[in-house]
Image (cartoon, rainbow, N blue to C red):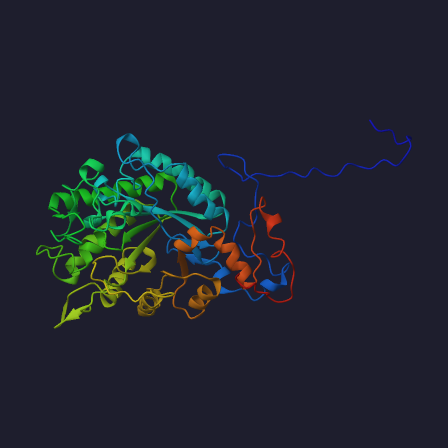
Length: 452
């Protein structure tokens, strides 16, 4: 022991400073509090007094409230990176953990796992994600756990590709590699299932380049509904806090909704009520299966972009914004908490006017169509590429949430960079903070940083 009579003055040792880990986590990780992407207190950081909407929290959910720490979420993005066959078919891998985890560590409020098929024949390509068995659910759990440890909301999109399944990963598309072939088909010899393509009707997406679907029977429809129920239960068990139904981009749910792809004459075809029937039954099933603390979302294509329009002679001839408004209202009655508004994907004849934020107006129209009692957050997606643009969309009340895909692929630190672009101080993982000293500089007002 140090003797106070020794030369010099005795100093009490400093209190223990502990590098605490995230509580109740499956492995040690230092705590970042508040979590990455959260705007820091204006009491300490004066420039945060006038906080942009993009970095204000947002609540969603009717029975159980959830909170987005900011308004930027990661869209589901297919990676075409699972095994195609055998016991590992459709099972997520370390690639997906790194891919999705990188967005959570860098501040995304919610990270959604790619379109995940509820049945083997619902995969877009043989290498797509699936959730038709427990092995696939087990692979999801560590990904959801990691996302949650970063203070982000773990989510998954469930779907079935319908008449656009058994196709090639985009970098193998024969129409790109060998233009004279003009085929997207993954043949049976390439782990495809061209003899078991499902659709509401035997109407191909494109007869020259896509497989021909068979009309789903009542038995197929029963299997379809049960598959969504079982996949929802597996997603819940794996730890999903949000489960989204994929009703967009020309896949099964969209196929049933649109007169372009649905020519049935039974209770699932014809009138708008009939075409909405199966999608709404699926939503009922998902809501009944998931506990109240798990939120159900919906992604839609607001329009087919059909060259002849949505109506002709008083009849609907394609899927469009007016039907989308009615569908969203019905979905809200089924317990949907958030709707993400996309567009297109159901016909090669689509006439899309692509430009910055080209789908935002559809989100705005749907948002405006909701009564006060129906009001839920509406998300917009599509060529939203900078923080100023995103903030303008929110300020104009065209949408409540900004959903990004390719921009995250280009910039995994999108949320942190948009914060700097708008002059906001948000928290950064403690492991990375030394790289963000420019942001952690106090100013009396916001000092936006111009994009390079």
